[in-house]
Length: 275
Image (cartoon, rainbow, N blue to C red):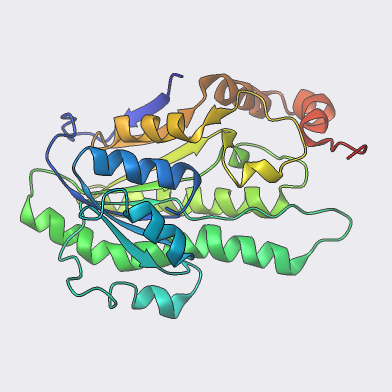
């Protein structure tokens, strides 16, 4: 699988990621987050791994107990996030990067617009990112002060669903579009200090997508997705897209909206009535 990357922040060096670093990874209990945590630990990095389920985090950390440090929290809970590192005997003094992978998906069945569902998804996927960034920014700035030659990084795992409209994705797609815009705007204010990268995966085989009852073209594994992200860490990429086939298809959809909304989106959104 090839990744599509767009841009590098001007003046930012792009060395291979060799030195050991400290990261905070939200949404680490399953899917892309879990595979990425394991991959970074294999490379020798320390990773604070977050999710709502402490048992899942403890099972993950057992693979690399010295490098994977469990940190149970709900990113949508403002108070929990403000105290997220308080449970540690040795909270981090700096972070070289935060990977924002926590998120949920709930589908909407119109004409019933479920406000509760919309709010839950936005709380996790958008406000959860805001909460994590609020906590991480001082620690990222501390890393910048420790080594002014290297920018710390914020990596947000968004979704290609934010490119264009998808059936039943009123909650999920909107939350990822808001997340993407927030991070892009944050980049404008932080670009002299901290690199900000938005990752746009297509369909990835995870417990989240296992609930889907529609066609998912060009699906990749969580391991492939994690490898694509890890290979581009430390390079200050503006964005990363994979798989390239779906990226191209959806970009074409934004240029040919009549074809997308009239034909293709209907096929992707059709559910199996026999099930």
